[in-house]
Length: 359
Image (cartoon, rainbow, N blue to C red):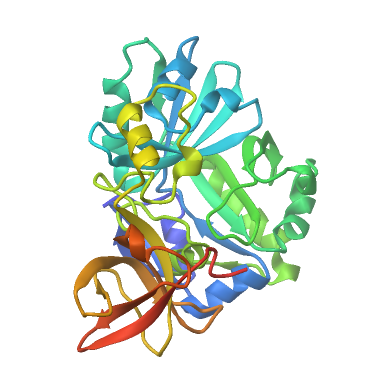
């Protein structure tokens, strides 16, 4: 099992450590609900250094990225980032990722930890244009500083105006006494904040300065369990749960990152699926009664027939009710549609709702 550069720091802070995507990761420190609330109302810090980073460079870098990704990376200018996915050859998704345009002919691709090797092999297999690829995953660390107080709490440790960095934009500059750090206004919580990319050898200094700067703002370390409840309240897909090799971006509600203004892997089939309409769709639902929907629970219709499975589910800390995502037939995917979740012996009624759960 791999460690991040901060594993010992997490252990010393009393984190409960678990294996996650091949890494020894902090799942919680003080408790999920408390950590969740810290990010929703204040500022918290996640070590997400297990994520993968690929640098793609050269005059054909954009050609390769356009070929393997669903979104239109030609729209990126230096300092902008873009959410995208890597479609496979049979209608599914290899991974979802963020693409950063660092400079002309240089792009950073940030991929999920569990898919680093798979994604690398996939992109490399499509690289017949001679783009230069470098896997930086083992050399770089990533901190997500999230919450409504993130800008105010972190402004003292950078010369950049953090408030001026718009959502899905980034700067490369000084942060916590380190140069050439990527400060990106991205994150998977829906509460604002930044993601900080630096070298493994620099991350302990960054971590310490971040907590020093945030002390007056009640900053706390946050584990992966709260990261999951936060992203689910926003309805953000988690690879391996809500999207995988067998789910198409169209049925997953990712049509907005699937641009048919260019050709990419399996684009013809996905375009046809979009035009005809998918047979099933990923929906968000809230339980109408008490209960906690869990991944893998059956979704049933009014007759009690199984029509799908819960892909992500939890008791929402912000809403105090059971929420989840799952695939259902398109005719039952409309907002206000009635479905039920089979929780042990009970079919608990639920209503399809519009995302995000938390507003």
